[in-house]
Length: 110
Length: 112
Image: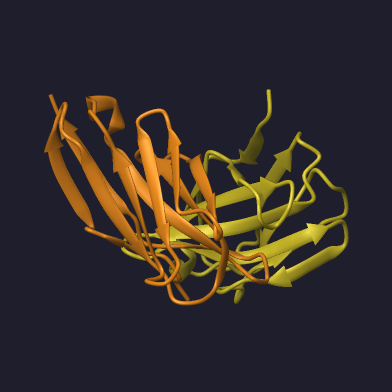
């Protein structure tokens, strides 16, 4: 069963704008990870936030985690056309199992 | 270069003809897993392995087998493929269950 569920399913923005996508999950987690997938290719790890962390930054990425609301958000600042991809959140539960959501498709137009 | 290698990248086969998708990682990772990706469903875990000779079912194991005889290899076996196994398959490895996962490039399987 899916644990992470992303919102929105699709997002279309212009270069330079910020892109925000959210992830909700159902059970207790050990950590939450965000991955990126270019069309039909393998997933690439972006960032991992542990359950005891609230915010994390990596370059133009900012991730927040609210364990009380069982939700996380990924912010991509100053988006570029090369950021066009699908973004997935994945939660690691107490058993260590990584479970993915259905993803958010982001299209960045020049 | 750290990588997970899957083969083949593309495969078209007929119903009932046994096939194997290979997966190999060069990072000495203990944890490996197989996922299938279908439109609107995200990635669903098929099987995983925590170490050599230790495997367990994921969320959608029916119709699949795996083996882990060596640390680096984790093949996915479809004994009798059916059209509902047409999908995009990914192998992944990580140093532990809770760490960053490294993914292969995917195998697009079509069963006719």
